[in-house]
Image (cartoon, rainbow, N blue to C red; front, top):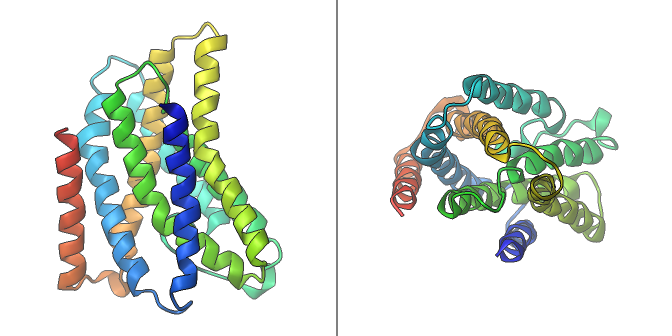
Amino acid sequence: MNFLVYLVLILTVLGSGSLVFLFKQDDQRVLKFLLAFSGAFLIGITFLKLVPEVFSKPAMFTGLFVLLGFLLQLMLELITEGAEHGHRHAHAENEKASPFLLLIGLSIHSFLEGMPIVHGFDIKLQHTLVIGIVVHNIPISLTLMSLYLHYGCSRIKAFLFLLIFAMMTPLGSLFSNLLDTSLAISLDTYFNYILAVVIGIFLHVSTSILFETEENHRYNLQKFITVIIGLGVAFGISLL
């Protein structure tokens, strides 16, 4: 089962990144709608599924770990410059370094998201988390591929970077499963804390998407409907 999940996670990133060749580099309309949907979906599953789960267990400092995840994501954006929520900033003075810094920041982000995917825990919760990551990774992959091409990377090199990013979530999951089988730790407490960190990351990314999808923080009717659809899909999944 984990192999299938890992395959879906990897292929989603590679397939989504490939879509950049179907759109004009200056066409942001599709990306904005994808971001609006993914942001709404992400915050929906966070409050409807993940938050109730993590606070249903009597673990100390759970809220602190949520804040830690939020602050960690804020720190990561110092090097990713907001690629997690669709920003496509490029500065001439650091173009040579930016692809590698971007890869490092997004790889840490993706690795952490994969760590709560551990066998032995609620399979429905894991599937909800995987679906959230998949939906979230679609606009990220489009943005990442677009940025690498902008920085002058060849298509082969850009796909190589994208593949490394695609592997990070499965590697995060494999790391946690390795801890489960090799170390005498309370994985239940570990799972709760790492899920709390991921919740903090999701909260930062999703709120950034929802507030920054449109310039001047304004939404038109189409984007508002897209957000409602994203929340509705999240609600439907939370009932499964």
